Image (cartoon, rainbow, N blue to C red; front, side, top):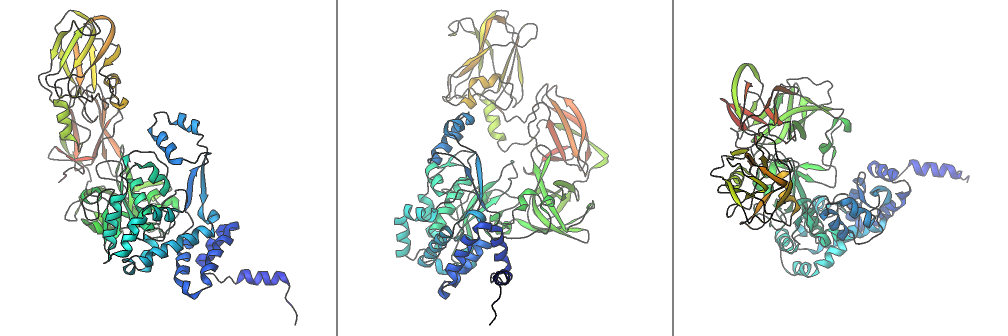
Length: 634
């Protein structure tokens, strides 16, 4: 029999791959690492009893593209301790230089992951799935998403399952001896996990680094729960809201799947079923981080907002309630149509952040599971730019959209005393009242042994500048504010003026503090949002060494505040949304603690402190009264 040439045999083998197209596509992307991935597939294909493990391996491999580790090329091993020094230091560059942090590296899983690592992950995941008493209530598809994944984000890979099982071995043994549910197991383990001290700027950390560091934000706390829970076979997810309605930040927490299939959220030391930030605060959207692709928008990434380019997000807003499906008319036509539109929410200074997607059909946009009681704007997104599809609208608690289309034929007189409505407004008033009965004093001895009273504060009307005219003609080298009892010397800014109306300069002096963020020099830094705060409630003071005796004719003081009031001398610009962009109505320099504008009715506004560039808040009006968005509106 005539033999086929070798190159034909190779050609036929390559053309007749026995792998499904989805697997073959990943194997091609793996390049030289293809053999490692094939080892895993061949390992589980040999024995029919491993058919489910083979499907698990295929799930991990199919969803592997786009996943990677990000870490630093450092010569040291104790990563966690360096992270602590790094984030705790005011000079991060000095720490980085000392410990030779090195360049940030990125390793794609598909081209670097080993067969041994994947096989070990699969074996340990199946082990706990089979052994735990609740495992029988976890379907295979749920197992693949909530227990099986070998990574969470972009943390450096390690054998975290082995380490977590060793760390909580005693607890795990109790699970095997008792008919415990997944939720109860979650509660017991959650109470053993370290409580994190709040810190920021950490890179993504793996299980070992998180256990050693125990500092970070909700992100790090939730990540540690994922690693520990999944290692012990507890089906747990990562949930998050991309942005709170009251600040430009989101929040992460976890959910555990109960034996009856419901997901019950928990957070840090807050156990499943107990209230926490993720359940008590109103939200625009809630997403669940999945390992597999949850959806696919058939558009180029340049036409998809950054958040939604992550196809591993599953919209679970409906599980948290108070949401509704809505249909929004397309008032402004799209420059090009790809069948998608997006919902944007207020963000930063006069910005909109797209956080949800919808489909377009017959001049309508359909959005699913939209959080009630919030402000939105429907937009198109092309070439990294947002384009209005309709006017902004308020989605009330009945699921009705109230659109803000400005009526320039009907004007209103508007008075403004703030650029936003702080959720801590009541606290700010208390801080201001702490200055009542505070004293301004002068002296010519540095120890104030010859102190003279200049002025006593009798009342503080609000968190804006107050002035005090001083009738003294005596000269003083040292001047200070002496806080009343329980006042903590809370003051944001102090200004002393001479008889000619000139502001006096000098060297800041005062009661010492440990925290440099609230030290006495903040009273003279020109930043209205920084302040002085003493550790002891009584006998705190702050002032200036003027260098030479001077007459004090006037004092201006600003109580501790959030930088959101109207301040004399600051420039403010009022904008309204005209359907396409923020349009300036008027620019004013404040001469008092309030501003007045003539504005169109039924419009959405934004008042910007141009001097301080402090973030304001979107608002509208009702019969001339300000209605701050997301703070009790309507």
